Image (cartoon, rainbow, N blue to C red; front, side, top):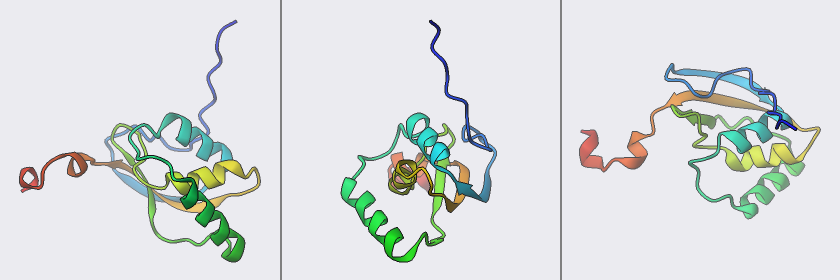
Length: 116
């Protein structure tokens, strides 16, 4: 039997060098897809942070905080893995997210002297 590929539920291409920024409603299938296929360069997931987000959403609902879900030019997220993890777990939840694509990640890997 041939393996089947999960259909891409994203309405944008995270693997691009063309910069763009927009707001979209992040759904659980989108969050799961991003975490599975576009979370290869992130720090370790902290379950306590996901729990804090859960408590905040329970108390206040989703707050549009202005912090973007960023994708670097290789298509990997650099921010928002904890919020996406929370969304991915709840089949009925969505959140409006700023999304920024084609973020340069050289500032994260180069010494400061190389950036001048």
